[in-house]
Length: 248
Image 1 (cartoon, rainbow, N blue to C red):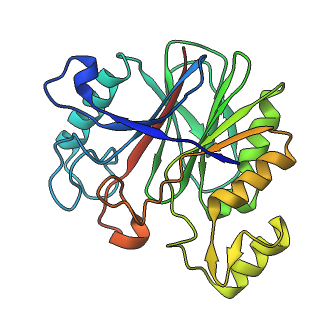
Image 2: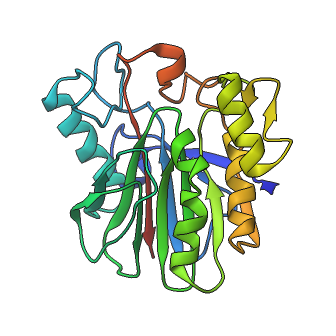
């Protein structure tokens, strides 16, 4: 797994005086766009400041609507496709924007819209294949069930993976029982004591699925609360970041 640099950009690139801030891998894929949006550049007030995308955490719906509008502007007015995330291993094929059902990963070979997931410690994984892309929401349950590898196998052909901001081994203490389950599933090295590295487990899952190129931005949502929401560090009254991917 290669750690890649990342750049931070803002909505000014899309013509806004201020706006949604996102990060992207450098270099990124030539045939797809990846946006890992931060918590900066929105209108939500504390404790959701400021680019929260979820109405399910107690934030004002008007603020969330404005935040999503700013994000859409940054994405070139692309509409989005999303799923009702259930922390499972469901992979959904998508043909157009809108709610695509229930699951935690989306795949599409259609241009003109973005695949999106909401995160606040869980790991977003952007998958780029030949004329097809996938976006994965991988928490501990999804990682343990191998959702990233399952999504990659469903794409066929060569796939590149980009692991976005999520909680990492520096901040993610788990139970001894769960640590044993991860060690049994992915081998030693994914857990240090009782601290779990979700990105390392995801990397091993992807490589088992035949993904030859796995890139990691190396960003921890627990450490970088200036940029990202963290449910584990901030509690339930925090926002959700958006991760998005689209074919060029």
